[in-house]
Image 1: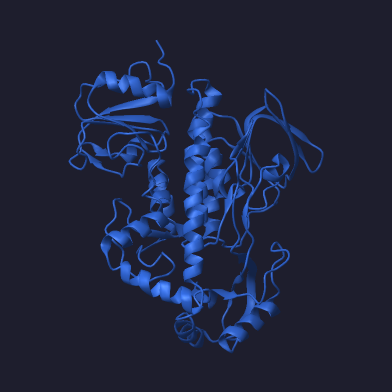
Image 2: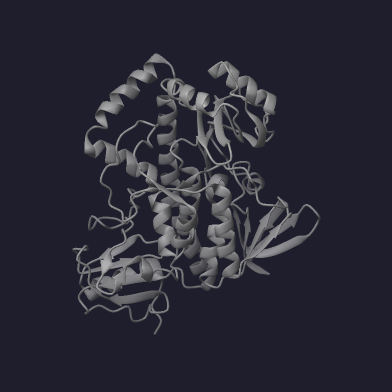
Length: 473
């Protein structure tokens, strides 16, 4: 019997498996596909996800294979310089999703997660002790919990009967990688076309291959069926007047602008994360990042529940914290899609917003939405840091994020007078000082969010049980 079965071998599922293995949880990851996808659905990591990789000691692997780009211009593609941001990683890391998937799969396997491909989940049932999963070949597996990380068409969500309200796609976009016969003509035309049609674009890769996106003629009845190359060529001719001599496609895909949010992230012993819980247009590049961040919020809570030390209601905070975050992403992508419209009304709003973004505070606010460093969970009244993730800060003996690789809680004590006695099996006590942090002591959850600020030991002791359970004598 496994502790957790994760359905879905994308970034969300693989990140979750790694987070659980940090706490010795027995994890099985299932995926219906026999091989990892070559389709590049996402192109990089935003600041909060980069911070997470740094917190887990993974960032060097990603930096070695990625390219750092400025953050400016990510809200609806409005070209503005990057504002000053409260992060040590004020850049976008360009790295294609298949590479992200591979790095996370390697990490999960290193930590001891079992990954089985070619295993399609077709049924599930649960009782007071666990979940029974049925595979397409008739095999039945048993686990204490199941997490559906199986994408926007999630089988787990459908079997649970969880409602997925929202709006269907109004427009489709075709996407693919192919050789371009007339690259100079393409890049010249793109500059003119994108003055009004923001869903048209091309990006050079190597060896004459380009990643090309073009508006589709209509919304597909079945988006899982890729477009034909002839359809792609025809839409290029419709939008640009030529197909630029494209040929030899590597892969073709389509995506829509449907926007939906699961009503519940948990039903008994079954949970949802990533696209299984929320789908939205890809503007701003938030989808993959949102799923990875779901996993880091969920992983330690589920591990604590399995280990038996989780305080009452800890697992339920996964929904109460992450559901509003997804709702906000859905709203900002809806707004961005309106701003991409070629109609006069949305274009006038776009011009107005572009003027407002000349104010640093507006530009920073919108940018922080995209890169997810502005999130604050509701932990009640208190210090301005409470509920927020803490940026990496330099310490006298290194960096804060270097101390978070094990996925445990952390008390950074600049006074030398505090203690986590009774919780030392769950919380690391670090006595050190930082010139960048103007608080005497700060308690971090395993996901890096601030759970307490202060210098009073009794006050600390009163807050530790909320996130780390009862003290061990």
